Structure formats: structure tokens, C-alpha cells
Length: 376
Image (cartoon, rainbow, N blue to C red; front, side):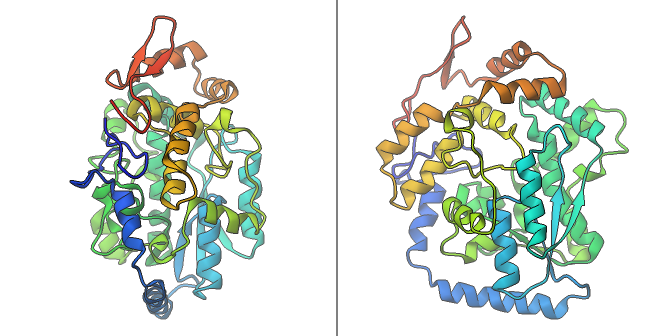
């Protein structure tokens, strides 16, 4: 396990490749941004928007997937107020046991800002069953739900005859998932190659589950379906020089976004602004840490380090202290939902720990072998 020489990105992140100088893709991209002509990029975006506004045959000329969170709120406001477009918002709703009151309030506030929003809700029984299968097979309850989240927007775009999908950040450039890179920095049609969606994403479900009639919400449209409907995904974050976790949260909070009030020791969320519509993602971030050696705090501090607002040493201290943070109450509510005990949960998690990175002791303690920022 090695770390980027600039930030705290480890080379254990899936689909990432460091440069020969030991720099992660995200830091390499950030260094290139210092030479970008942002006015030129905005003009490209304006031309693109004008083209789709002219071509649109429907009341809406683009579609944006939203959760009511910081990124989607900023996208919706920017596309409408800066580009003069008419976006249709698409929201995948969680079951009542999972969605937070905060999340409901945030999506309601976004609608109150004057947007039309289509809300789709996959059958809750199927949702729960697939979540159980996901956790049992991968120790990743979100393996199935992410399929529905990513699939819902292009499915609705095809159904409504909307050719342009705006997405937030480019995971290839801004996170380092290189398989998602397209022909340009804003071409998002290779999003289908990300770890969640690629390689027969539904195969594991169809192998484990005889009844497949209710899996439509989990099927990402094929390349042929994209081409037939002339669908294009555009990464909006590529055009915005101030696109960042903190900036997006600041913009959205000014428009009424509700953020978390639980502390970082329970959530691993330094600023309380991520995944506001549900709480169980906190479990997955903790488990991600035990599998790959980094969690949510690492993602936070990497951005702060690149922006020059935090020293690498300070980021390492925060990651070391909070990357595995997850409040017991979140674990308990998740276990109650999928019908397992907390003991069974931890047995599953400990069995999935990356033993090259961690020691698992007889008393259940999971202790890293690596030093944050140094590696193994």
C-alpha cells in the first residue's frame, strides 16, 4: 500500500493508477486545473446548452438526478439560473425505514425553489431483499441500491425523451476511477464502466434470485438504448472552477439545505454535508476503510490538501482518528432492517477485512498495519 506523494490517496482505490512520480490521478488533474481557461470552458458549456435547448422536443431540455443534497442542489440551480435551461429533476426515493427526515425536507426545499421533480420508488420488499443479498455476498449493502440510483436517471431520460443528462463530478478525473474517462473531460457516457455498473452488474442478482421480474429499476440502459435515444451524459463539474465539496455545500446551505448535526465521531463526516438523505452509507464508508484502507475522512481531507487549506500531516491525523467512525445506532438500525443481529453484522465485517492492511484480534479489534500517509 502506497500513498500519493501530494495527498492521502492510497493506491488501493479501485481502478486508480499513480503516475511514475507517485502522484494520484486526482492530484494530477488538480495540478492541470491551475492552467485552465475557465471562461473558455463556460463558453463551451453555453454553446452545448444552447444546442440542447434548440433541439429539445419536450418541455424539459435536460434532466438531473437529485437527492436534495449539496451537489444536486447546486447543479439544479446552476443549470436553471446560469444556463437558462429547463431541467427535470429525477429523485430515487428510499424506503421509509432508510430515508431521513432531513433528506425529505431537503428534496422538498429543492422542489419549493421552483423545480419539477419526478420521484420514483422501487418496490420496498425487493429493495430490502436485494440489500440483504448485497450485504451477504459482498459485505456491501449498497451494491444493489447503487444500481437503482445510477439507472433511474437514464431510464427516465429515455422515457421522457430528454437527450441531455447533467452529472456532477467526473469520477475519472476528480476521484481517480480511470475506467469512466470519456472522449472529453465532460463526456460521461463511459460512466457505465465504473466499478458499480460494469462487468455484468446484475449477474450476481440473477444467479441468486429466481424471480427477476421486478429488477427493471436496477437495469442500467444498454449502450444501444443510449444511442437509439441519443442520450448524452455531461459532467457539469468539469466546467466549474469552484466545484468542490465545501463550495457546493456552501452554495446549497444558502438555499436552505439542512445538514447533519451528528458529530464526526459517529459519521466520519467532517462537515456534516454528505449523503444527507440516509444514514447507512456511514456503515459502508467504515467497511470501505476496512477493505481498502481509506474512508470518508480521507476523501474529505484530500480535497482540502489539494486546495491548500490543510497540511498533509493534519489530514493524516484526522484520517487516522475518524476513517473508521460509525455510530452504534446506525449499525443497530441497519441490522434491524435487514433482519440480522449486531453480532452477525460484525462477524461478516471482520470476515471481509483486508488482512494485508489490518490485523483482526481474538477480541474483535481491527488494527491497521499501515501508517496513514506512509503506507506499509
